[in-house]
Image (cartoon, rainbow, N blue to C red; front, side, top):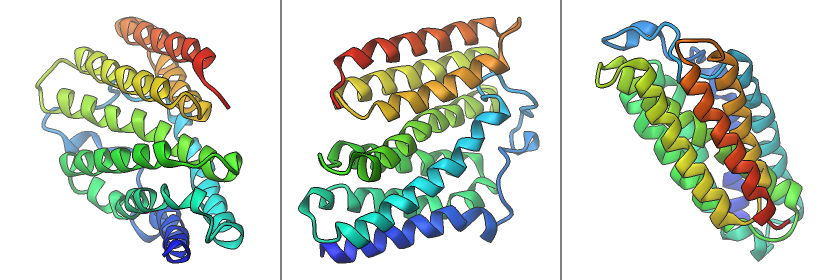
Length: 233
């Protein structure tokens, strides 16, 4: 079964990375996908931040390939493979769903996050850069992206003003990421990826009227960095 899961994980990673080419692609939700168009929502990071997907795709494939070729029967790798497979399998279908429905896309990305975090908690103690690191950056970015989706729904459906929606979403992201990083006591790549997203939020909101959003993002960065002292390698 270990070898079978290693094959399935590599296949899922490849399909996940290829999904933008097998669909219309995704450059963020269109403003008109919401009852209240989201033109420049303060919850959304600056566009450059999304370039991290290239690193995530490549590292997940490289880690899965290494696992298949060198660690297919290693029990240290076995526990994290099923939940990571589930997350990537959902992710392979995410873009077509996102282009149709922000609500269902939000449901799916939270399922991706839950299974990715479970995989991160289950990663073994060996091959940090092949096993732990790709899962950590993937889970870290999903933490930010899933909360951004919540903020877009809150603002886009008029449940909260856009700035308050961004603050609620950021508060959720900070609570989740700080709790996850504290409980992990390792995988600093997770926290650093969340910080990458938070810096991009600051870059998009460094002037009024959304300066409070940048302030909360800065608090989050400080909190995650403070936790770094409790992490182990």
